[in-house]
Structure formats: C-alpha cells, structure tokens
Image 1 (tube, rainbow, N blue to C red):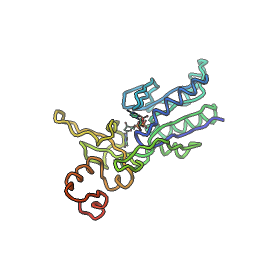
Image 2 (cartoon, protein in one colour):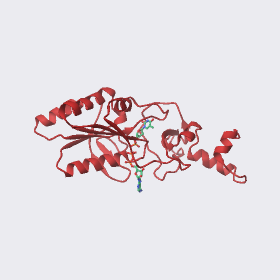
Image 3 (tube, helix red, strand yellow):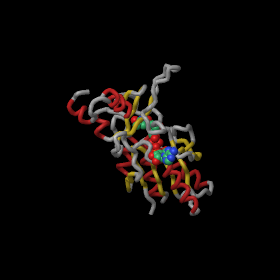
Image 4 (cartoon, rainbow, N blue to C red):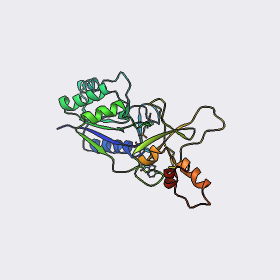
Length: 236
Ligand SMILES: Nc1ncnc2c1ncn2[C@@H]1O[C@H](COP(=O)(O)OP(=O)(O)O)[C@@H](O)[C@H]1O
Ligand SMILES: Cc1cn([C@H]2C[C@H](O)[C@@H](COP(=O)(O)O)O2)c(=O)[nH]c1=O
C-alpha cells in the first residue's frame, strides 16, 4: 500500500541527499518516479545536495496540481509509482492535500522532504499540513549540530551576521559550508546578507550564534569562560 512519508529535520541535515538516494534506489528497481522541488538554493528545476550531487526536477509553483501531474503522465503511458518532493515546506496546504489524494487513490508513494519550522520557530503551512496528513513523519538520522555540540533543533536566520526573529517567512539561503558563522556583510555590496545557522533550543532562545559566542569568548579570554553561565547570570 502506498504511503505519504514526511522526512523532516533542520536545514543541512541531509534531506536532499536522502531524496536523491531514495530516487536512485527506487529507480534501480525499475519503479517510475517524478522528482519535484521548489526554490532550491541551486536554482529552478533542480534538487541539489551539499554533498555535491544535483539532479533535474520539476519546479513546483503556485499553479502546480499534483493530481494533474500524475494523471497527465499516466495518460501518456508513463509509469508513476512514486513522487520525490523536496523543499516541501514551500508547498501550499492544498498541494499537500493533493499529494495525500495521489497516495490514497492512485497508489503512488509520496516521499516529501522539508524543514518543519521557520527562523521564528513557526511551522511552515506546507509542513504543518504534512505533519497533519502523513502516514509517518521521519526525523533524519544525521543530526545537524549547534556550535556548542548539542543536536541542532532550530534554524536561525542572520542578516549581516546578526540573528533576527522578524522578516519574510521565505528567503532562500544557505548555512556556511564549513559550519562557521554565517557570512559577514560584504564591504562591496550594500544589500544585506541573509544566512542561516542551525542551533540547539537553548542557544536559539538566548539568540547566541557561533559568531556571538566567538565574540564573547574573545572578550573574556583572560577570564575563566563559560558562555552559558555568563548569559545565565546576565553578565552579557
Ligand atoms: N564536504 C562534506 N563532506 C561530507 N559530508 C558533507 C560535506 N558537506 C556536507 N556534508 C553533509 O551533507 C549534509 C547536508 O546535506 P543536504 O542534503 O544538502 O542537507 P539538507 O537538504 O537537509 O539541507 C550535512 O549535514 C553533512 O552531513
Ligand atoms: C529557516 C528558513 C529557511 N528558509 C529557506 C532557506 C533554504 O533556501 C531553505 C531550506 O533548505 P535546506 O535544503 O533545508 O537547507 O529554506 C526560509 O525561506 N525561511 C526560513 O525561515
């Protein structure tokens, strides 16, 4: 029986990599699938993994109807056994309903991949609907880490290196590739630089990014240093 599975986690925990691996494994066994994505960092009509793999995909937009997408292909005689749906947090709730219907009424497996919550810790509407409708929500095994070493559970947004909690819900962007704090503002450009950093809840709530922690550490280098203890006592 077909299933709707939501593979979820923070940014940078391997969702797109798993999406490409699952597509590969199902294809290798002769199943027919369609890959979808929306607003991938690498551009339109693509699923890209930070491990370097990238494959073409159908770009989802506001007009995409997943029921029609499957019917159109099957009418042409193409095999559709499963859908890979990356960046699913950006799909609308109506589109997620279409995905559930495709599973139940056309026996097509739907594997959706996405982050659950935004930089304000609020659910994306598409992710909320996936949590409500999925047969299973699967948290990825690879854990993104906070700068302190704890498991990262939250996605922080930085603007010119400073963590923000207000702004548009959707701003396509990336975490720093080497895990270092998000990019500093460029002296040559005036546009603000938006970046992301994965944090544990404690450091998300206290709004301490890697950059902030480094600054505090360098200020306190002559004293015995414990960022959390300092914050707790309100000395910073
Ligand atoms: N140079 C690298 N070497 C090994 N693993 C890497 C490298 N760069 C990224 N990764 C792995 O790729 C993961 C991110 O994969 P990706 O599929 O792009 O994440 P997501 O789609 O969840 O944002 C990282 O958590 C890390 O495990
Ligand atoms: C937290 C958050 C993220 N985004 C964007 C940033 C990236 O383009 C994607 C997540 O992609 P990934 O493959 O999981 O790294 O989402 C956003 O628009 N708004 C947010 O609040």
